[in-house]
Length: 216
Ligand SMILES: *[C@@H]1O[C@H](CO)[C@@H](O)[C@H](O)[C@H]1NC(C)=O
Ligand SMILES: *[C@@H]1O[C@H](CO)[C@@H](O)[C@H](O)[C@H]1NC(C)=O
Image (cartoon, rainbow, N blue to C red; front, side, top):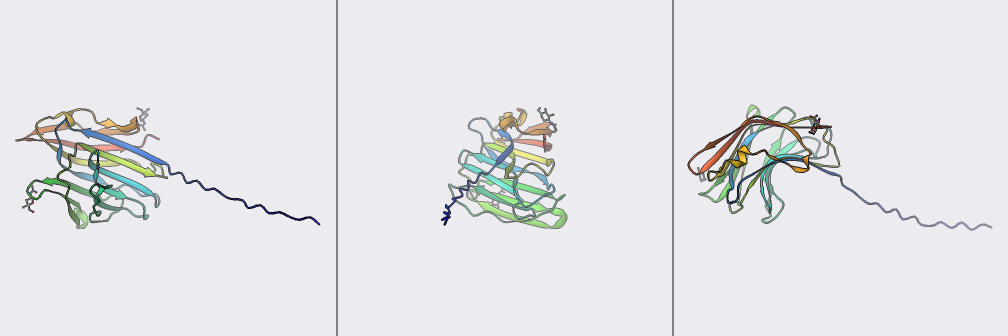
């Protein structure tokens, strides 16, 4: 009689998340910080439910303040928040959007209230959301235009930003006139001429369009 011995096979499942970043960065000079960022983001197609995070943002070395177009649910949703701690803040309000919508984002530091006021809108559909964040003590010295992907590729085509206005304090125009940093060199992009306008203790940088293009 043959005794069958069944060995227990332990299946070890190792989960590996593939992360892909495509990022352009505009950095202020030392001792200069952003006090505003506004513009339009054109909503691309959403091929599937997956962790697509597409965003403009302002950051320092403690976190990033960002209106994020989020594809996880299978339909796009956009809302502004502070990622990811110190301070831990609830995500701001937002709304669902669709391919072809133009979302206007506006982030302004308010020195009277000591808050960052943000709004999002799609004027053609009457969509509007606003939230204020207690982040005025941050020294936000980088403006970022980013595609952040988890276990999904860049399969939605170009990401278009228009009518961008980046505003910093002081008088240094370098953040506007220098070429943006291209993290890992992983982003093909086209950008219109930048136009720096110097005001009374601030610099506004106007960019008609900035398109992140898939190099694949
Ligand atoms: C700052 O907030 C105050 C109070 O809500 C408001 O009256 C003022 O217009 C704001 N300033 C800016 C620059 O948005
Ligand atoms: C992206 O950039 C790389 C490096 O400059 C270039 O070789 C490639 O042709 C570009 N791809 C597209 C689609 O423009």
